Length: 147
Image (cartoon, rainbow, N blue to C red; front, side, top):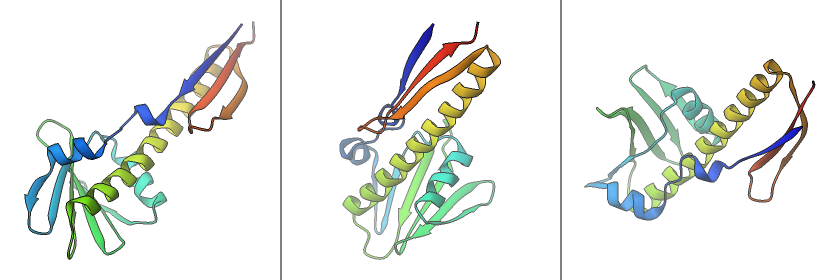
């Protein structure tokens, strides 16, 4: 018996320009956006993968690159709030930066889910029969029972 699972990063933490615009709070030089990036370790890995200088003081994760700074804090509802700032910042640029972090974060979530899937499969008598990355960056995994 085998099972094929398709893991799609696009379904994980998708933010689009309309979502960002709906949640943007206007302040001079600062754009704030609510996100679904809840896991600090995955967020830090995503930011590091984007070549940002990352610091985590236990209360906030801050990334600096491209002359910009994004600080991620938890809101009262547990949802990350991203504060983007820098000289001459405009909402469109803030959206681009947050979307790039969102994409990198979704890829980190996808990797973590795949690792957990493989670990649980092995613990339940299954092996990975095949694994491939598709054109849309989803991952197809076929598991086989070892009997």
